[in-house]
Image 1 (cartoon, chains in turn orange, green):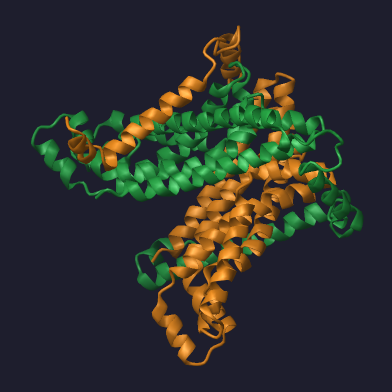
Image 2 (cartoon, helix red, strand yellow):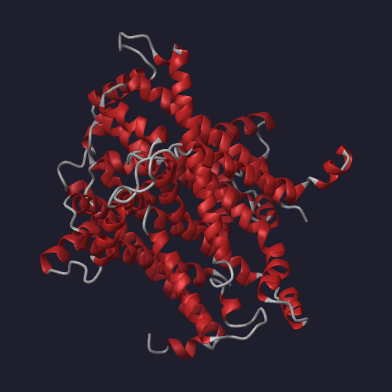
Length: 270
Length: 294
């Protein structure tokens, strides 16, 4: 096959497939195949963990611990999310550039503002919430507030980016009509952009709440109480029956939020 | 609420029922936010007051300075080529872990692509609707929900019980969680695609693998790859977190240096972490643009 024919053959899907195969082969080559993959007795341990599901720990005292830690996880998730929305919405509005469209300032100034807010949002979301948490704990010490801030920063970064995209997708005609009546930027935002984008904004926020539950659960890693913390304790004591009960509570919490969020999304889809 | 059934058949009534869901959701959300903040702030150790103390901000400033290598006395790791090389190897391991994780999630989602889609199990895409098909569909969906609901870090906590530390356990933990996410999204793509090609193939006597290959794949593949790329951006950020649990790569080293208070080394690891995140974001955006090959 001539090089020219190879070039035309090797485009789009084929190139991508080759790239994926190459990437997978390269990552497998980084694995240390000298040492055994499993622990000695790993299989027996796996079986023991699986059998502990029948039945999980269901004593009233332990169920109380599960309910309390589920509430803690939910409370941290909701607090973190509400802070993330409070930070992400104004940043998203600035990043979308919809406020500056009334053409009083120069285009360059508007572009600089949008670009710098976008950069800030990207920086906030480039670090995982647990890494933020570890940094905060090292910087100012362990407290619930540190965990909530650690969660709110990357979540505000994601929310801000998506909010900005959703605000930019708002149809231009009604907004233009509002502007011709002499509405100020704040009015255009409050009565034009926000109401029209509201279903999308809410849908995404609810979807993120589901992720927030998981994020709050693993905040245990820096010592914040919640389902993850209890899982860690039970695992350390090899009490696998308790681990199963806690996992069931975690799944139930996520599924409940998922159900609520899909109800809200469906009720807004016309 | 007992009138809901009748109202739903009525456009105006349906609008009212919708309104109720929204209104009650708004009340519930407001109540939940208030209760959560009350619970956290009423606890004396919430740390909220610390936010307004000068001392807190001084400590934070000192910490940031020590990340940059100030005040440790020893030569900063930032100026030692050997440290850059060592940590670069860790960064490559972390990258390999994320690629393997996507491989696991992608392969799993491809295998479960057909049984996990409702329109395959109920025969909309051609083929006979079978009882087994429906049972398998339900099982796959429950499997997706379970794998998705449990966070990567908890999977990693469980997996370190059976597997020796390294790239594999981390990739497996990330792969299982993301299989639930990518799998669900992909099944929804199959459910929403145009059934005509698959039905035509089926009517022409094509076998199931052929229907999958020529009737479903060509339509579903671009979106499937797009989801994988989006998730890869999330996964590269999470590899470090999974690595905390002895799973190797940057994460393990990060955790160790943190506990030894080697903050200047932590700073170097953070630089690699950010380089990886930026590289994957750029690559993913480029590939996503290429994927739209139609």
